[in-house]
Image (tube, rainbow, N blue to C red; front, side):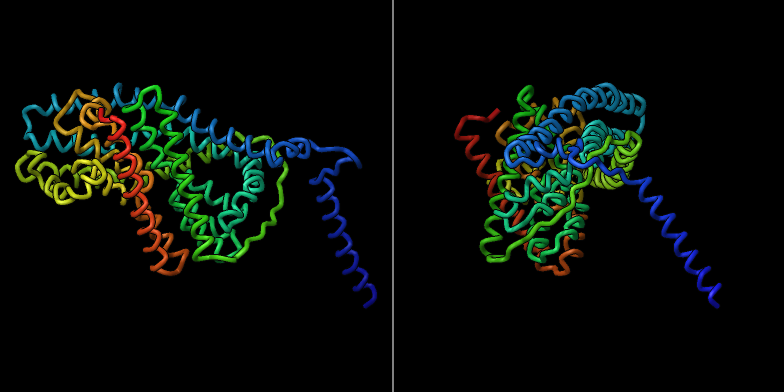
Length: 430
């Protein structure tokens, strides 16, 4: 019996010895008094002033890279690939029924083909997000933003799901699970749709160069800034009214900095871009064909089509926002998926004009003041269907989801109308 107990103790001792060796091999203990590279970098990254400036610089760099690197490729895809293919379809089917050529060139290619121009923007944006996450900087960003998030009744952890919103609002809403406070979690979920997701940033990146040329980047930054200001103001109002007196506390472990893994970043970009395109491609293809049918029938004339009748029925809202019926239909289409706004514009403005790029057609057809209003409305419009479903699931109550939809609808209409009125008063009409 004693021998058996000794054997058991020997086995346990052997296991602990093995664990100790593995821990010693995996962990590196700096010498006493030695300052690690992480500590040196954190002197600036976690500094209340330099840390904030660094954070702003990082996000500014992301926007600059997204525009500067993706824009030339995006332009080539539209003018060098999509337009020639559309012309080829029209010429090849010149003897076929008119509706067939229109369906393929304007319905299928005009909608789903536009998604191809999103790929460069997606690749650059997701690569930047993956780089920040893989280096360990995201945790520092949460720490730096903690003191500012407290003004919204939140803490630094809320910054993480809100930052994920730049990629997609759906995982951002789900990411709010990391927040311990029920009120903080609720406020964060309500504020997530103010963060322009990659689909809305795609719409922004697509439209601003068309109407503002060299000033596109400045205009885009201004629009994103408006969204973030509204996020801040709404958060302050909610925390001082519906959730008054509820404090949030922040405890978070800082990971060590490490060199990013190229394979990990490439896989992140591929997975997210492919998932986005797969989801967007199927939805946009169906929506494009539906919009084409509504815009073609009953008499092959867009102005007398079923789609025109729907748009004209919303004329009072359109007058308030400075949007014609086509822009209103495109805005409504974005409820299914935000990227559908561009697909709808491709159908509504691109139909019947083979050889003319969609960008040139939009620039010639839409006044600048209306473009400003449309962009603002798109960035602030109610969340997409997927986000609404996830919000309902995470909040566990339809009332809060409907409150969020109503909140964003009212703010979108108010801000877009204000921008249109101010632009018109300033003479920004064309």
